[in-house]
Length: 145
Image (cartoon, rainbow, N blue to C red; front, side, top):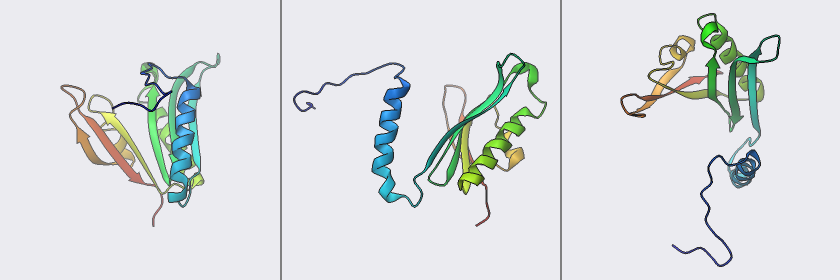
């Protein structure tokens, strides 16, 4: 396929936050007329030590009535103390306050497949990815309908 005159195709590793935001905003503008609620909340919840170093954290976003837990990490020295549950709970509280009815996330078979079901998450899909492992997708209803 040829591009129209004056355009060129670029593959770029590690696109800038500015470029990613530009695409996010363009797609959001396209999606807006189709959604009852097109607000967007991109957020982080962190556990920091006295020097402000991150020791655990969660990155997520709320959009179109769904909370997506993108990343959740706890430093190895702090695992099994309830910090992951605390981070997940804060994200879910934010999601409910923002108007989300449900939450979804994914994890690898070597990460947290036994962690999330303890908090009401149910598997809805599984992929053989990466090799010799699986990527597991889970969801949870946040508010009763």
